Length: 252
Image (tube, rainbow, N blue to C red; front, side, top):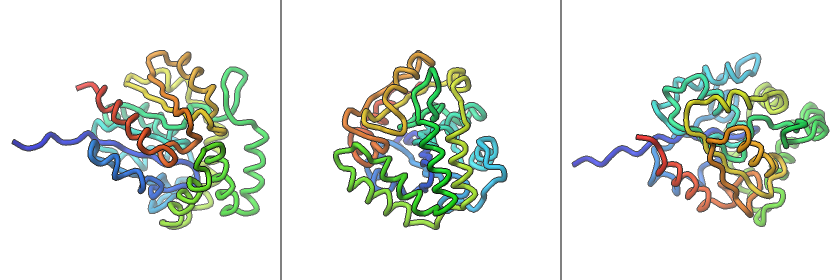
């Protein structure tokens, strides 16, 4: 008797990154999943960079790479892309997993997020030195993690495995983080949604967990008590267990 095929898992990386960021995590995931690591347009090995750099254009380019009925796991910026993919192509997205991601990254009166001041600083730095700005962003992602130095090292090593990103994709991706508010779209998704947050995350503050629960009561959330913005690097075993629990809950 042939073995049952493992469910498909699509991993979407964050801003300034590429698919190599998952390489240390993959051996833990592959026993449970058929894993697909996609580069967002303009990053890693993805040749296309749409103009303007919009979620709609990104999803149009990614859709042919999506298997049918996949679990889409989006980290950080990849979470916004995952929400839009699930909205546009529900027949291809079986469930959505948001990892240190938010439907609205910027702080709003009723939503925890990053301050406008921080984003303005990043935009100013980006116009002067793209590589240095990405390096500083790596440091912020690991801030608060007990293994911050090692986390930064792994992130930096992963980025350098593949070609440098397109400047248009880097600046366009930053604007998506600044301008996107997909709270209404997320709440209307007709599929299971799971979200995991790092309690020490300074980019997606832990307050977003409760805000998401109020926005979408059917969503199932999890908190990594000792993680920052990259739980899959600082806490790979716990992150694997989180995805395994999602696999066990998948509808037939």
